[in-house]
Image (cartoon, rainbow, N blue to C red; front, side, top):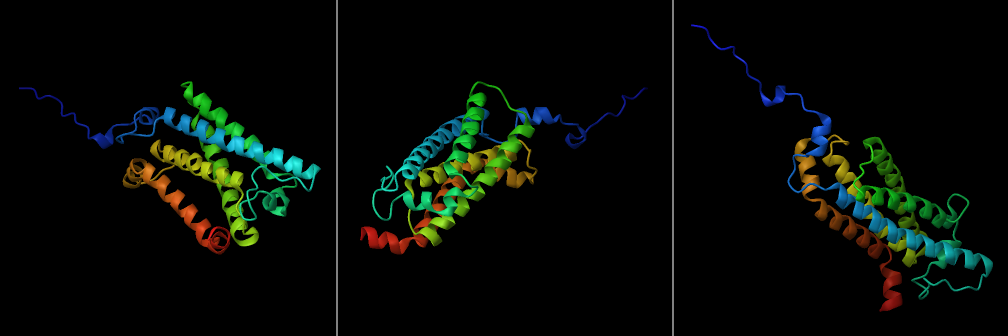
Length: 222
């Protein structure tokens, strides 16, 4: 009596196509490409407008030293101090110029993703790397605001707030799609708790600014 061949394969023995994993991440409620596209488009657009307003005010201030920028509300809430400092021209030209170019790219990628096109993984990782560098600049400007200027620039603050979701959700998506390798437990926790992560980052930024500027805030408003 012949016996059937003993053929068995454990799940771990089965080769998994990377593209298949990329299409169907094994996480409940994953971050969709379209959602990421909306985040890049909306927050990139807001930051682009803020950088544009800073550029206009910077140009007018350069033409007329007595010009009062539209973002100057009082001695504490003003853009003039940031624009006239050396940190405001970190690379020899006004920082908003760099922001306009950078956020235009972010908006473009977001719109492309909304059309259903999926940029290649290397491109997304490159954008994430550039965004990480941009976030490093934000940390430097926040530090400058707190410990050197002692003032708040409204348009700058808008850019800071927009950079958090632009960076964070790109990072979450890269972890979700295994472009950034992490243990599965960490991967799942980051993707599932991405909204909580956003709130934590916002609270940390606001606390940093408030604690560092508590004396000027109290003197101005209380």
